[in-house]
Length: 297
Image 1 (cartoon, rainbow, N blue to C red):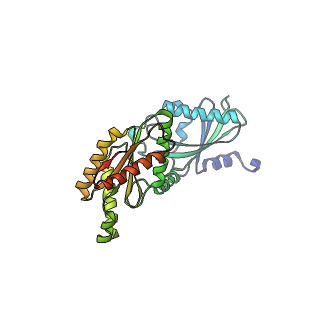
Image 2 (cartoon, helix red, strand yellow):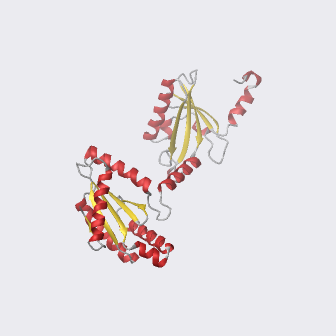
Image 3 (cartoon, rainbow, N blue to C red):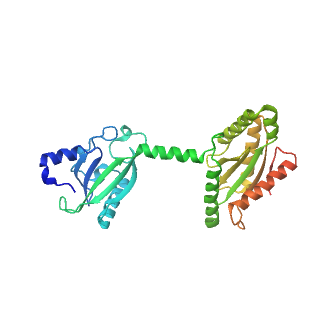
């Protein structure tokens, strides 16, 4: 611990003012008692105007209530409380469209003070801008969940979504349908025209999926030329015209045809794998029956 007696009051004030990240003294009732630092102009604006105001003056009610809660948690724990949070222009009073268009992310380190400020318990709240790391985290997550060739969700993300929707079905009986399809005679495309042509067929099929399906539908590339479409809140009767429309659009816009199997989650299913198995069996029936069709179990 530094010996503060070595420094004059002016020097201590200068040190606090030089902090790159802003540090706020906030009372239990949410009053800004003091603001220090925030000199890194890449990330922060001058916060001195906050002194004397309260969280309720500065923030809209829902966000202000969240900050009040974090102060209370830190004071109750009497120890360091670390939180991550985002602020957007809709959270701050009076800035309207003048604020940043994107959310700004912060890590807050909230430390109770051992003495009262303005006759109240108080905390030191140090805010560090972590927007860049959040963007990198989101980019890495997207890359880990996206198939590089098709741009659709990859197998890993698909299985995660199937698990989530199967749990919803098991608990609340929320319906969901699953379509598995592949491109007819895809091996012939690769053999006759080369793998580049096969890659283009996959990319073109994925593009039709993005444009032809509903916003709530979840298309993914399972592997090779095989695709899966998860249709939440949809039973197989409702899903069939959606699958047929997709089949026709792919034929119209790519020149290739598809064969598909369509299934839905049922009360007897123990896992989403059983739903996929029924859809896969129906896919092979579609192939045996002549291709270019959607079949249900």
